[in-house]
Length: 315
Image (tube, rainbow, N blue to C red; front, side, top):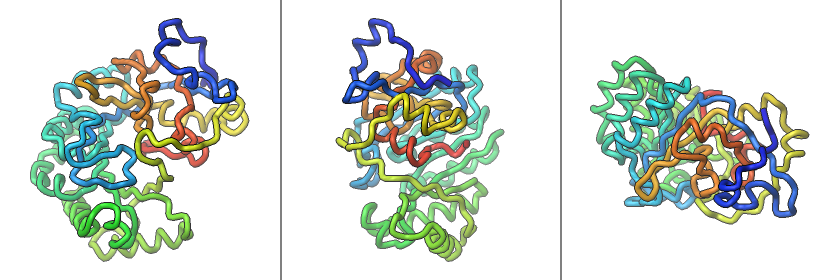
């Protein structure tokens, strides 16, 4: 897999910033070339029922930074992805169940591939829980990943609002009772051993009537969109010296793309973590996006580089 970028065509040089190609001290950037489209992410919009101050998307009620993706927006990309051998469709927001087309989009997607939905599992999902019943009859598995920031209700509710911890557990329990696959996402709790964190979450799950070994995905701090973050620069040498061929293939931009709707049109971004930087718009079709080597210039790229952070559960 390439870790250097080919010399870009002249028109591309005018559409992306210089920092796409070199670091702030003029060293060549590290790049990753995609080897496949295993996973297609669709961003359902940044509207959310919650307004968490730490949200990496800056989502909140009525937010329109990224617009709600309708079925007619999503279908062409789902169809194109199928021609490219996609293995899974994944959905993020905002809160996906704010989007009135979400059930229809899932119904169509599940006819062809497994699906993953990232959700806070609170009121928007719970209000539509009966609509999920028919999705159990589709050809492929539907998996929900629910945000549970901390094993203590007070810590979770401090960022998401009073009562949201209990409501998220209610949503998890309803989904479990319906037989859907589940996992939980939380930020890394750096002041506690991983064994103790696992023990505490297991106790919460057990008390809620959930499997105590429910899979958990831990993430580092990603910061809200367009935050200026000082992070080490990732050069070509970094990608060669500290990453292997195998580890480079685990970067999300090596095997996935994300479609967002912004200013009334859909665009393909390199991954779920970089939609606040226009340099990462790789095209309007999935096919053309896979031809563009992806720069490691975003501060969230360093999280992937250092921690192996990935929104995917495919790897």
